[in-house]
Image (cartoon, rainbow, N blue to C red):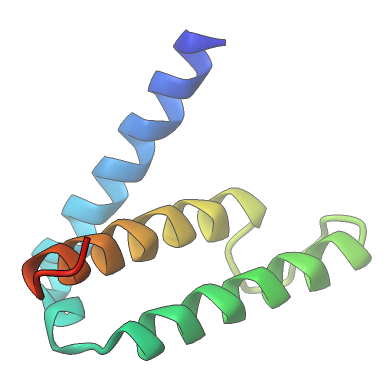
Length: 86
């Protein structure tokens, strides 16, 4: 279980680094509400994929959406801590 956890955390971190390379730290200009909206959109997308028996035509799969949710959550936590909220 720990190895599987480490594998997914590594993949999530790699995704974050790749996107930050491409887009910079665009998330820093977002509000907590904006990050929450992105997480909700990803959750709805996961539901759509599940309801479609995991099949997608052009979008990323379930795993990519979960990785995005983790990264958006970490970004929200960073913004929250920088704002002095605990």
